[in-house]
Length: 265
Image (cartoon, rainbow, N blue to C red; front, side, top):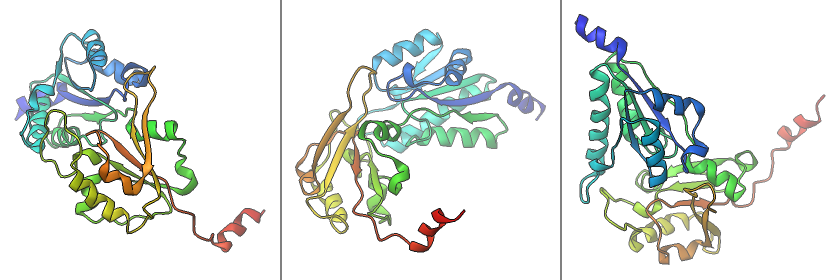
């Protein structure tokens, strides 16, 4: 028991985000955490960021080897969690760096932090720039105008999520609807996009203009945006990492009682 407490006093876990395009979107706090870690694990989307992480910490190791075509994604996520905890239990300061924000659509980071804390180890998450933050900037979306709702696309369909079509709607990962694993060159399945469109057509007209969005992975690049009618979505090839942005319908008549608050001194 005393040995366990001794390891818990030295082993720790930090999970950080390196943004969408790496160094320019990484906080100074996250950089210092990655640099000082005994073991740095990472999962990023492009080789320039990978090279930077290896220069930052010679003990940097990719988690990408845990992915295999046809392998259930949830199994991969559990293996990532376990790999992070191995070093923590051995008394190491472990840091894991993930593309974007480490708490957004990254199950392994949440699982690892939760398990580490239950076992008595200090564990903390540091934020990064996620795709929605880039979307707000690139598409000119102000969450304060009419609100923003955000759902993972498959969950949106499975749970029949309720939402307000007079607020902006963001759906993540529409290119991997219902996919249990990854495959090379993965794109959307038309019949599944059709199911999504049928669900959305209950609330929006087919002519409603939507945007498929991909944040730039290099600072000098421009975002990839494709604007189209909702009823054309099912006939469109959608990237596995694309985000769907759906602008709000016209606003409801305002509550005059609340509007009068602005006139009060």
